Length: 245
Image 1 (tube, rainbow, N blue to C red):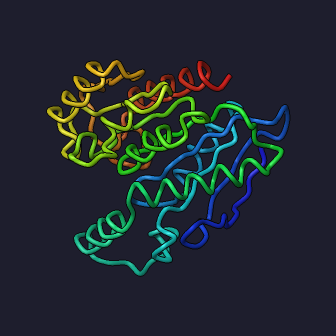
Image 2 (image 1 turned 120 degrees about the vertical axis):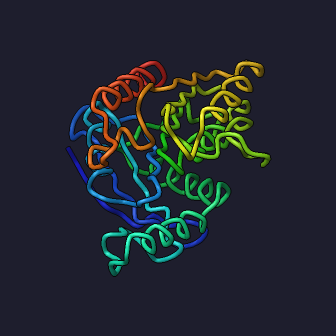
């Protein structure tokens, strides 16, 4: 495997991005991997490595670069309540339009790297970034062939870039993995998403993972559920095989 961490120029600065891909048999299909609210950490890099090992060129950008933050573990420690408030403040400092500009920059960088395939690409996002993965597919319908929102939040909003609307603007195959117990995306929201997508004839699947909680796929979380996590990997890799080759 080949790994590198590079500063990719964007409209607002430079996003430090972890890139990993196989050493041989390239070029490899691009997968944009958007981080969750707790930011870049080794847990996410390990997940990127797992995706890359299946034959992909994975890009994991730091979305908090506008605030000069890379890894929350590098910041001065705070009491739990204050640390969570800081995290939510960082999460609120970015928006779908901002991250779409970042996605443009990521694809532009990859298109100049011979290790990355110029063909169909994928996008995935966990937690706060599920909405970014779906919007990336809508932003680049000619390029991003599949996208996945993993226990994503704000699935149905009154904004024009709400995931339930963005999903209707792309031919990409989309997958929404939702936890049965999720205060950030309650079942009522998930059901509204499912109804909307089916009514519009979107190329999308909404799957509820029974008995698990928000964050179930992260191995370092107390809510980690190995069977559900492995099921989500099975779904992701099947999605990539169908659309990225």
